[in-house]
Amino acid sequence: MPFVEVGFTVTKLGPLGQISVPVVDLGSLIQLSVGIYGWWKALERKASFIQVLKTSDWQLVSTSTFDTGRYELSRQGTVVQGVALSDGRLSTANLPMASTALPPAGVPRNPAELCLRALITGLLCFYQPDHVTHILSYVIPGGLLDFDTDAAPEQLEGHVLASLRQYIDAIAIEEDSNTMRRVLLERVDQMQAQVTRATRVEVQRSESMVYGDSMNIIGLLRWIVTPVHKRDISKYPTCSLGAWQMALVLSVLGFEVSASTFVINTKESYVEYISATRSETPYPDVMLVTASVGHTDP
Image (spheres, rainbow, N blue to C red):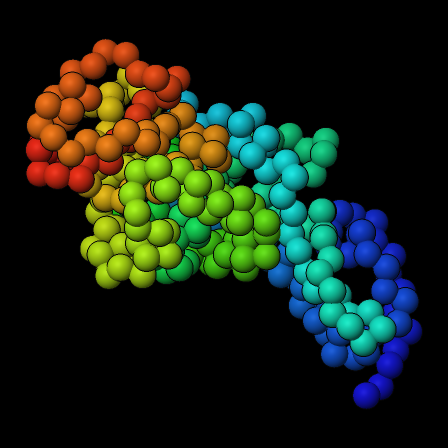
């Protein structure tokens, strides 16, 4: 196989800004080129989605229930990982500047963009990009868009939806190699062990989680992105373990929500939960209901 001498001059931040590859084979060179393009693609598609919204007189906004500071803290210590070939051996290489989850140092944070990124990151822990796109097509109009017109769409469609899907696809490629997902899923495993004997993998493999749980997830996310003073209910009982998992993941990613480890399985505990004026957590609770003892997933 032919070998080539490669030298890089990187003046802007990017995955290649932290590695040095003096000699690589042609195949590796092509892979590096594809990798750097993929990194820029995520930024490009985010800008494209924002612009598409503007053409419809819509503006992406954040919600008061999202804390950018907590989101940034959740990202500390996580990194995109790649595979490097050295002396004929493969090894894992950390690429600390390859993530687009946060803007580079010195660049102002955009709360709306970080809020959307956090939602996408959380959903990608459990769903494929097409399913994430479907869910967010209902969630974004309900709490993350500012309209110049009186009528808000119930669902994103057409070229707006296509642009969102492209952005989610780009993020999915990056998050598949980011240690953030491992951190989030380890947290789910740790907390879920306190509420059920079913493992996370068993839940994900269940048909209801993949196909029948979309409306529960959409309902939960709409509640989470709705400002507290505009919510019809202050607590969220759910019969969906998938929704409970999602609340837990989003709580780690900076949303002001808490996944309670107390399980409701009696009429008495349900009434006590709904009527209680105080909570052991600083944020509104999502509580798992495992019996038919009251209304769930409003």
